[in-house]
Amino acid sequence: MMKRIDPIQINWKPAKNKVIPVYKQIIQYVCDRVASGEWVIGARLPSQRTMAKLFNVNRSTISIAIDELTSYGIISGKSGAGTQIVSNTWALMLPTKPSWKKLISSGYFQENNYRLQQINQLEFEPNIARLGTGELDLRLFPQKMWTEVLQKMSTEITSWGYAEPLGILELREAIVEHMRQFGINVSTENILVTSGALQALQLIASCMLKEGSTVFTEAPTYLKSLQMFQSAGLKLNGITMDHDGLEYWKIKNQIKNSESSILYTIPTNQNPTGITMSDIRRKELMDFCIKNRLPIIEDGAYQELCFDNDQFKPLKSIDDNGMVMYLGSASKTLAPGLRIGWVIASKPVIQRLGDAKMQMDYGASSLSQLVFAEFLKSGKYSSYLVDLKKTLKKRRDNALECLTKYFSQLATWNKPIGGFYIWLTFNESIEVDDIFERALKKKILLNPGDIYDFKHNRSIRISFAYLECDEFKESIKKLALLLMDK
Image 1 (spheres, helix red, strand yellow):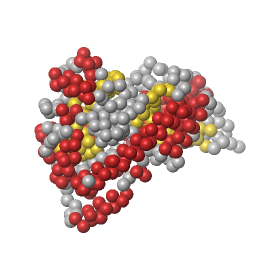
Image 2 (tube, rainbow, N blue to C red; image 1 turned 60 degrees about the horizontal axis):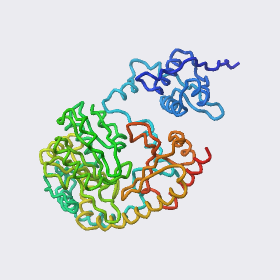
Image 3 (spheres, rainbow, N blue to C red; image 1 turned 90 degrees about the vertical axis):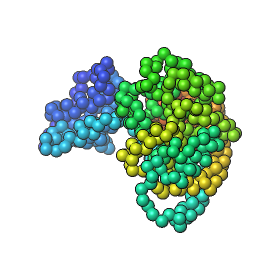
Image 4 (cartoon, rainbow, N blue to C red; image 1 turned 120 degrees about the vertical axis):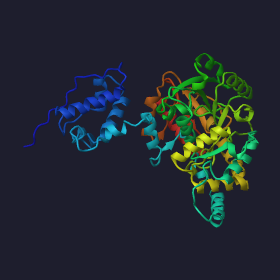
């Protein structure tokens, strides 16, 4: 006769005033009950809705805890049987076995925000509409040009040795020529080729800023969605924006020590808001930073994606004092998988970053460097950008028309002059966390604004770069109907 398993009883609530996140308190509570034998294998947990009431938390918090407990192998959802305790071995791990859970949480590199981890995984789900993704539509890749370049490379490349510490000279020479159109006049000694602009940020965080330093940045910002700066013991300080860009004067009273502060900014087609800093504001910002001895990291990932031939000069182009480290990238224009980025800075800075990079990976991919150099030198890259910007402008206009048609009563938004993004803010009656989960059931993946901000907001990042016009219209219509059906 099968032994009867008593139903699980919960007479506990997490402390919301603790430093430990509520979902982690819930995880620990479940583990403790299993380890003590109070909750046995086969015991069934209450529904997520019921647990949310018992713990007095949102269902999204319960969902996070359930996902992590499932990843440990402690619980499992079985069809028709709900969520059950399936193992107690995690708590009874023998001393001779490595405690991987303890080891993976002991490194200095912090975990991404849970929602961001979830998005990173869901982006690879089949048949999902990525309405906020930071990636260019793969169908826009210039396949014909790529084939031509590779065929040329196949006859010219005779060896595959390590590249020079600062990157292959041929590529650095091509970047020097390419950046002149933006008013940036430097030599090859001022350029370091990196594995994407993201590695450049890692290099700066790890070898140029001491622990406790303050990184000023726009609020919201792409940087807030990363953990590399916080992992290095740096403090992020968000500064608000208006339609002209960063409100730099709000930094003044917060600079305690210019030697331990730096500014990170995306002045052109900012991620996630799409705001482009005006020329007047750029000049004022440079004057402010020079006066206050505040170095600048300028992220130019979207610099080349201004529509209608609008050209806003990079901060680096008006930098006569070596204040600016400029980051460039091929990830947002050509292909993220190429993993090609670059830093433009004074020679001592480039030498320091280059030395650190050699310790990390001993050089970016030689093939990627040579291929991108050929794209630049042959004129194929410039030709491709002309067509790409026409396509993106068409998609932006389509996105704005769709939003006007379906979201006029639900939200407000801006009109970007280029890039990928529209920053959409919902009316007060709408909560993004709830929308995220409901949209996911309709196979629509959103990027909530909280990922990028320093405080709670009701915004989402909309991308018009990944979906074709008809696909975008269908997804935005579904989302609007979902909201009106609440």
